[in-house]
Length: 442
Image 1 (cartoon, helix red, strand yellow):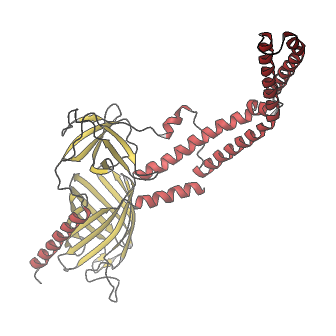
Image 2: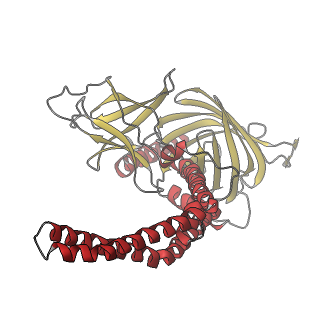
Image 3: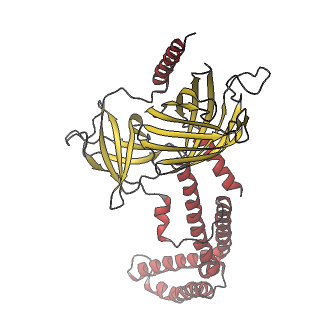
């Protein structure tokens, strides 16, 4: 097959894949829309491409972030044109669940207000967190795991409950006082009626007055005894009120709750920024005419750090570990990468051999790449590592094209490739559940 026909076939396959991905994944929106900015005090873990919803229906997404000199977060939103939002709207940061993805919820506002136009800026509403509510309390010390803190909280609550049950032991004293007070009140009412001539005569009232005085003295005596027991901490109620241990336990419960909330917020905040991408690469070498497929997963716990696990040159072996182009079949990739401004450096296992990669992003859609591995390779001209250099062009967040020279120190083969990225939003939930479970088990 002529080289031109091979190249044409490769481009055709790429175009078909491009169209399928557009239709299936829908990462490029062909719908008309408009953008505007929202200012928040705190965006609570909102990320790029986070959905924007009205009444639970997705109407747009987050496009960009900025920080003002005053420390405010400015979020740029893209909204489908058919959805109108008015200037008296309410915009808040919500979550799909305790460990769910963050999104923006919009209350459209009233049509009596002017509609928001492209380029406008409005004020968002920052949601209060549990940690904000507890901020007035003194912070606890130490860094105990969530499981230990929750256990302490439950133990403190149990202790307080036992003390409340213990306090009920004084119920007979309280009931006796209330019974004597009720009797005294009834006798006083009867005595008043006699004096007024409504019932009985005055002589009978005077005869019963000493008994009423005695009952009153007994009632007030019991009140005094109960008060003394409370004041002296001899009774259960007094111990509950005056016990410094109880006050300390209440305070410690609040501190443990605050620390547990802080730890949980840290875990869930990291989880909210967690991104995972499936990456498929189809490579074509113009010299040996081979097509090679790579598949892997890129895990980015934050924007400047990532892990990659994958398999390169996926195909069935025919008696040899290497193909006609001297590339290892079914080789493994497992490496760690960090971003430093325009540069990205990664290293680890590259195609089943120790290696290192460096790339420089010169423009938003253009990046120069280099990768070296197989340092122990021996060729006819001596020991030479495998070195690839090239340029990567981004057409969309999920579609990249690479052009470069493979094995530049030996074979000098020209190679082209298409890379497809799929943003898997479900995997972070699994990683998040694992993180929470690990914290609770400590």
